[in-house]
Length: 412
Image (cartoon, rainbow, N blue to C red):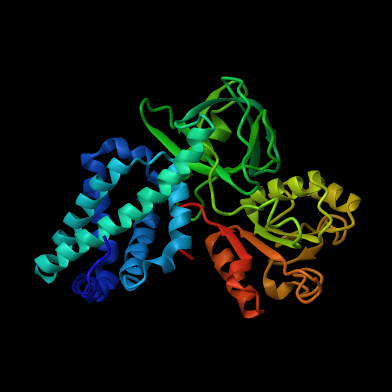
């Protein structure tokens, strides 16, 4: 049921205090939620809990919801991404009530008398409205999972483990039941659930892009080992996969999900520009290989930035594909090539990949194609936001830009 005008005004009245105290509220929320519901620790990224990234993201989301309470549909793209992540973790409708209770309790605890009973009542209604929107969206996604006969974590065996660079390793994963796999949309991801740090009962899940063209026999993910640089804790799951999981071992996977993908029907006649940094390259390998398999003749530009050649993945593959397909342009940027590496042989451009470093026509295909290109972006959050903003300044419409955001799910 939509909020009434009085409730909307009550929510708006809390915007300033949410801006000031939002993170404190969310830290309190997570503390009580997880201490009273320890089973939910497997749902939430414990690394992002420790470094407070998750808290910052949820605080931003609450503020965005309150600010746009007049028209929550503005947040639909962000909510779609969050719902896709939820279904990849098998979040259930009953869990929304638990979350709502602890969120409202945290708001009351932190804000005290500043949050009047009228404010609190309005927020209870607002949370219920948001929860119902998300539950409905997630139910539709779960229905598609059910049609594939896959409605819970599924066991997969590692059939191949291949090092792609010093940081990135690919895992080929085959279902234990040997049933044919559903065809995903290139660009989508799965969640991987593993036991970590050899602690019985301690499980964590992470989302990883599928990095191969869809096939019915196996899935491939390509994972960067998160070493926890700059004082951050090493990633639980990426280190478990790199160090502990071997060929023959079993992991649990979710059904493919995700809102960033190449649509073989709607996008087949459009030029494509893919812009990635670091391990953000992985979904674009799936997209590129799918387009090649389907014989797409439209112009395709694949732009990738990495620190060094040793950290860069799929160089040989991309060189081979682009050299045998005249419609594919591949451009590799290295921030720090070695003194023995030559431009044009080991990389294409020295320096950081930015929109300013690109040729507007050759690299971005602006004003050169009869059909507007679609732009895909994937990489660190700052890189994606910077690239998206720069493209928009050049006149690229928002609807023509697609990006994938892992980690906290904070809206861009």
